[in-house]
Amino acid sequence: MAKDKFNSELVRELAELLNDTGLTEIEYGQDDWHVRVAKNVTVNATAAPVAAAPVAGAAAAPAQDEADASNHPGAVTSPMVGVAYLSPDPDSPNFVNVGDSVTEGQTLCLVEAMKVFNPIHAPKAGKVSRILVNSGAPVEFGDALFIIE
Image (cartoon, rainbow, N blue to C red):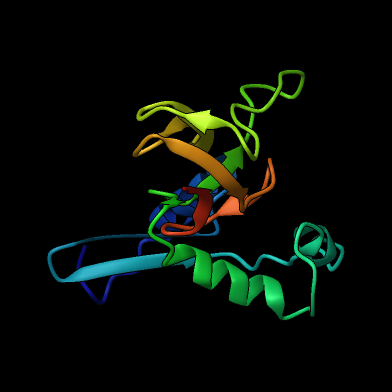
């Protein structure tokens, strides 16, 4: 595609892909051109108190606490952008709970990305001291999900 020729069909296909996958942004390109398609996403104001519920303290504490958790030596971080699920399905118990002992390679949660459920495994044996994500919550690459001591 030449720089001066706009391909509206490509933009429509990328926008449809955004809707189909639940992504908020996609970029595609070749050689000397690229196109980025993004959509606005509004966050429900009630989501913040739900995310803050497990953490006591000031409203600014969860963001600071999460940033600190990512640097924790026992942090298990998300390897991708997606939606985290703590159990295999809504009617099943969580893979792990706070206080559980885990073995290296044990499944801790699932991260759904592009309609594929990716298991997140414990990188080492230890005890789950914190769960930093709620089931069904969106996660970004590098977000701390668990702390294993």
